[in-house]
Length: 451
Ligand SMILES: Cc1ncc(COP(=O)(O)O)c(C=O)c1O
Image 1 (cartoon, rainbow, N blue to C red):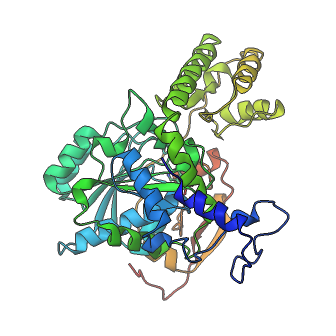
Image 2: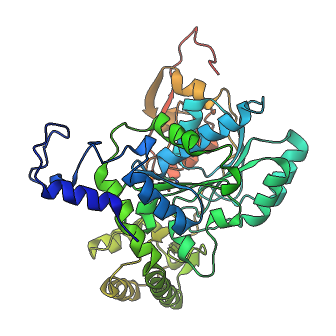
């Protein structure tokens, strides 16, 4: 498999062409890789009107994933906005207002799309705020009681390594003409796993993967996949237009090269490395369990420890790891998430096992996360995003309306979203997760709901 983007850029750099064009570093500088950072010069193609090397490279990716695949150099965040704008287009073209039914553990990019596009949102709640197992029953109940939404939006895998079974959901969606949109930011590698399915193989209509999270790709590199079933509606022009609606007009050629360069490895070699790493992760998990730790989540590349029963919070355990020069993916009071790369060295696993075996077991911590009632919306996400707002200490938020999402990254899954009333139970949850301040609407007489 060829790497047309890398080949072009390397050739351009080797020619030492006099660069009377951007970027401003002119191919030279302190980083050492500036020569490979390019703009849309002749022959370099144009991501959002691709017809040359980028299109060829995306075709290689499409062959690997078995469906039309588009590159993003601005992460899954860009793909999420694009997917939701395509869902809006789908609804409007059928004379309907867009309504998205979403598992509440959606990443904040979903809510920024809601603010930008103004679609209606209804949520499915379950479990904790980070976890939401959307079931066929949830979908059927919604259809029977509230009507047929434009799309079902599922985040799978979630931050805690839970995978939502999609095939039955997709059958129900397709029966009712509902789009199945999947935030698969954490699951690009599932395409290469021999026992699990990538969402596109389970009937997802639109799906994003953060290639940079689980494949050896530079940060920002991501894919938007479109089901071949829908290419008459979401044709090449529509999809590129949806992406460019929210994207920079200067996509990073470094990231494009990274997406291009990984294709031959994905075609040959990656699956074997994945298998080996998954086996090593299973072994790591067995060792951790044998020490008395509790685990959760079933995703093969993640190890999600619930350390309270062992006497530690996830954040305390993360500090212990940090002192030993090991950095985890995510920690909160209840979880520690380890997410090794497919190319992780054996020495890292050995160091982890040695460290865990030296941590003394303590009395279990009984404190559970506070329970939170589903927040009541006083206005749309869009209206709240556009009204004047201010940052106030969390302790002063009770009774105020959130202006935007209330959590940073990771995990970037909001506790309260813009337009929702913050009650005492939400304040308790925010304090529990260490959130100090929150953006709320300014109390300004005369401003009405814009939504
Ligand atoms: C579940 C989920 N969706 C979407 C995103 C956004 O992905 P990206 O960083 O590629 O924009 C993240 C990032 O952490 C995520 O965890």
